[in-house]
Length: 417
Image 1 (tube, rainbow, N blue to C red):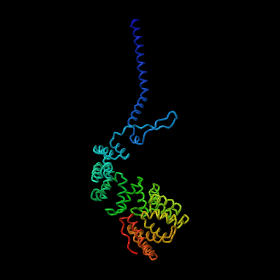
Image 2 (cartoon, rainbow, N blue to C red):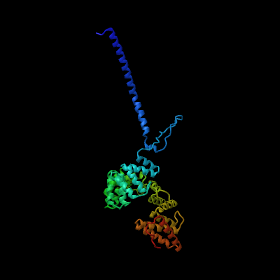
Image 3 (cartoon, rainbow, N blue to C red):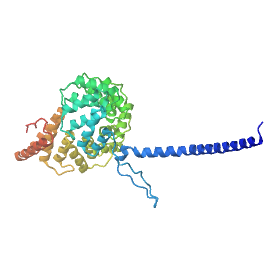
Image 4 (spheres, rainbow, N blue to C red):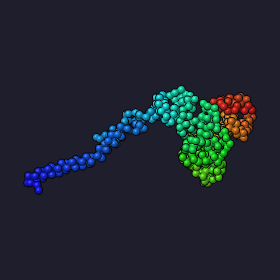
């Protein structure tokens, strides 16, 4: 049994123990409560140190204006990215291809396949380095051997077109196939066109439709357009006007001029399940024409000439025929010649009529349309019956000059009267 003195010491020690324990517990709680704030502060600090380089490239941040309450934008870090490939991308975007090449090659030699493709692009285009197809192919091969679909598609294009290497369709198709299987839309479209047109291989519309479908489902407008043509004609797939209209419309909505023209034509003709509607036809023709499609420009000219859905407007018809003619559209060239022949919407001018009939015949021959070539020549020869030798000579000189300027590789102008 404890003595009174011992009992007193025990009570003092116990009180001290509880006091110290309480302090320790309170301190631990305080530290625990502050942990989220500390972690958040650490995360914020780390985030500011490793700011997204892509955001950095957008421009200087704007400091918050606390005095006016203006909306602020985060101030970006001025530190350049440490990854040489990403730094190369930024340099290339800024137009500094020499710096980009130095950065890319560092990453490429370290095995970065994206950088290897980028080096191939620089050599293929002569940006920041001397243009060298052999070097481009070498870099594409290095990346392609790692399984890069992008590199395989680019290398395939070099083999298919014989750029910097002997043309090799079989090697191109093998590379395209590998890239396409990985989802490369470029390779899928390329394969589709190869099998659709029978370029270097036997035409295989079903195989073409397979690849066009895969690319179109990824939003590739060129593939969507070809897929629409397949459904419209029943080439490689069961004919389906509804599916043709669907895919033409998808490509047209994405701004693809040939598809916009096709949609306009469907409204104009009332085909593929579309209701006959001149107003809609004109709308889609104009969209394609404004984007430079000569077939749409010529069709607009016909609409204003004949007054389909709009009042007859011969000067407007002449304007669209002229725009399309300058692009080599032989139908528009013949139409423009007819306007000059009879003075419709333009001042009557047999010399200009003869000129454009001659150019139309030449363009039609170059594009393999022998029927149109013959029709233009007949009209031209009829014009010649009422023209002086001097007028004919002047018209032929104008025609030759136009052809030499616009279509140097086309067959020569027919030497008839």
